[in-house]
View 1 (tube, rainbow, N blue to C red):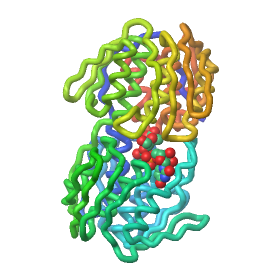
View 2 (spheres, helix red, strand yellow):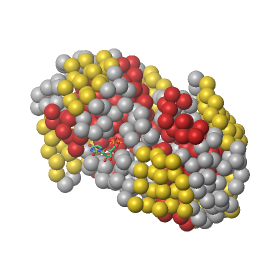
View 3 (cartoon, protein in one colour):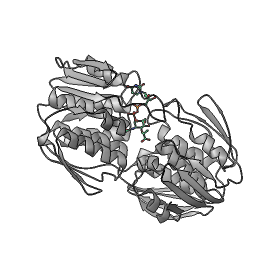
Length: 416
Ligand code: EPZ
């Protein structure tokens, strides 16, 4: 298994252009199925999950070229809408192809996305919404077979503001008759980015980011050129790095407005946060203060994806920080790895209490998911001596050029 060797104990200094957002690029790539015309998606991050999404589009018959930044998709060659289980298992979020495939072919089949390290990852909210919208869905041990019986525009209320379910409904209803409303939708900035892309294709969707999304179906969508928003979680990752290690970094192509709660936390930890419209500067001198209690919530609350990263930044803080993970049932796997480095953490159910220590020691640790792996790298940068992080493949699912990025900020990191 490929791994990182990190020599910690130095402050971070330097500038970094933040990558395009993985969690915006993936639904936007799926949405290109909704037109026969060419689309050009710029600032598309060079990640294994993006490669998997492109592979899915190609397996359906689309022609896709990708130069590591811009993806050019010609969907006119799509002849079928089945995604085999092997491809579905490659990327859990392949479920977001279901809505656009249904709209394109009126039928669709997809293998079960399967669980992951974070938990079981059910798709009941996707299925319930599509059934309410007139889709017949059969499930068997191999996956899901769906067919549009008779589209019925609806007023939908999501029991939980699921990001993926919100995106599937938006894409399925963008090309339809009538008006569909989504109450209690996910409000993440990536949802707004998807709305903006769909509207650039000629859709008529309003309200993303708020409490109600209003979709006025249109007959057809045309091709579009679009620039994906910056990745707010990647920005938060490097910000947590400088809080953990000390130093002074500038994150270019980063939007402070996408991280309101998180940046307040950094200030409470003693960091100096300076931001311009498209950059965020973070300075940290001395040991950070602990932040009391962090409870993950749907946007605009504290993001679950930042929980492991913030925990890494509190391992050597002055005081105690409690983390309560409310979104995923198994998103504390990084705790055991932090303990190997000398952290003091007690867990009970979905809460971890971190008591800041004055030193961490480098050792060998194992990543089991994307953000947990990045959090181990942050802890290793703030530890004394060498750490080896097993499972670089998990990190590369979400971080473009992770090793060069950390080196650009002064981190002593290499792939071994
Ligand atoms: C998206 O996952 C992101 N992935 C995740 O980022 C992120 O952690 C998550 O949203 C929450 O913000 C992408 O956008 C590709 P959900 P998604 O549907 O859509 C439960 C990362 O690190 N749920 O909002 O799968 C589910 O089990 C990844 O970049 C149901 O119960 O998230 C979970 O507990 C990790 N039934 C909660 O809702 C459903 O039908 C949040 O899921 C769907 C979800």
